[in-house]
Image (tube, rainbow, N blue to C red; front, side):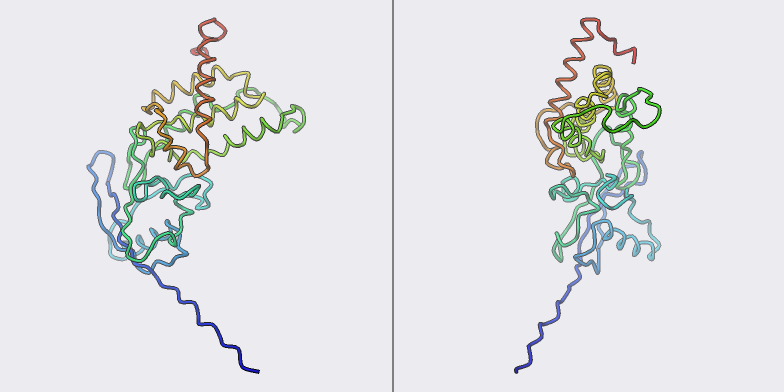
Amino acid sequence: MRPRKQAAPFERRNMTLKLIVWRQKNPDEKGQFETYTARNITPDHSFLEMLDVVNEELIREGKNPIAFDHDCREGICGMCSMVVNGIAHGGHERTTVCQLHMRKFKNGDTIYIEPWRARAFPILFDLVTDRSALDKIIEAGGYISCHTGGVPDGNDILISKTAGDYAMDAAQCIGCGACVAACPNGAAMLFTGAKVSHFAALPQGQVEAPERVAAMVKAMQECGFGNCSNHYECEAVCPKGIHTKFISRMNREFLKALFKENTGTFTPSEK
């Protein structure tokens, strides 16, 4: 028998990339783009690992590394907030920056990296922004305030599969803020809509529904977020695929709250 011809070994070529990165020392100083070279980057590197490689080289040269937010690096926490080539999270469907891999790029590519750009998200340092405005919206009403004591049995309150699936779709929001960064108006309507709709779909959340939506919309306005004008950029960049139907649900809940306020059913200031 003829000896079987062995396949040629797979050749993995490392990439060299040109990075144009936003650098800013603090919120008060003017920032600027600076150019770096990322060397020996493999297709299996994640985008954040690529930045780690660049930062290690900068540290060896005695220079300040590029500051960026990260935590789980598993697409769960939403901390990896940056704009890649003009699109929040890099523009790949349902992908956070930490799950964006360098196989999506080619050797010699130029990559622009910026922080979130929104009035409500001031830049703190390089690619790090202050997204605590989203926390203020949650603090205003993104919870159920009743005291339940011990953990109730899962079947104590029956919930239809339709309502459960709807609420779960809304609850997938990880609060990364990509919707705000992508919106031309810097609106947080998709984020707030998801949080309002999550509770509005469940019986446990319907008791405080009018107070909740009124308080969260008020907090959204006070934090400096803009209004929705139906560009749908928020849905396009959301790494969890949150649908704009939740904005419509929030608007309906808000109109119902206004009706109850006008009829004296509840007073928002009492919350």
